[in-house]
Length: 143
Image 1: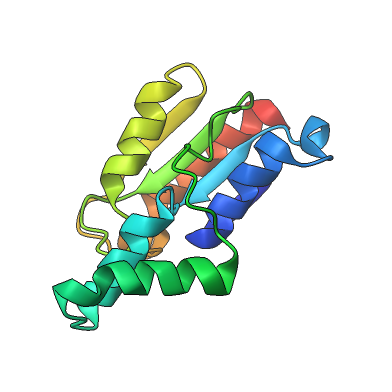
Image 2 (image 1 turned 90 degrees about the vertical axis):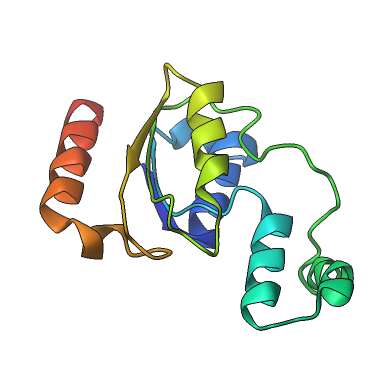
């Protein structure tokens, strides 16, 4: 079982799909996953009032510093384990629409729990009782 928040959720997803230990992963819990790093970089740059004309440069700078490729393939192209995703439409860092697309692409494997009015990576903070109950129900059959 792997769990991650934000970019950590993305790394958990990539490990489950592409790593040498993927056979050991029985499921994923992803909180506010960054499923499109370019959209997230753009959101962060815009929040810091980076002029629109410089946004492509910000994306290129992040790509160079992190080694992220320009490959636009989804990081979940090889998902084969169940995943529980906590995410909210109010997330201004990692757009919620990508979690919705992720869930739609894998309806038998991905359960998306939408948390209204929660900022990025604060899903538990917005609704702790509901979060814990969804988590318990997801994990119990996998243990």
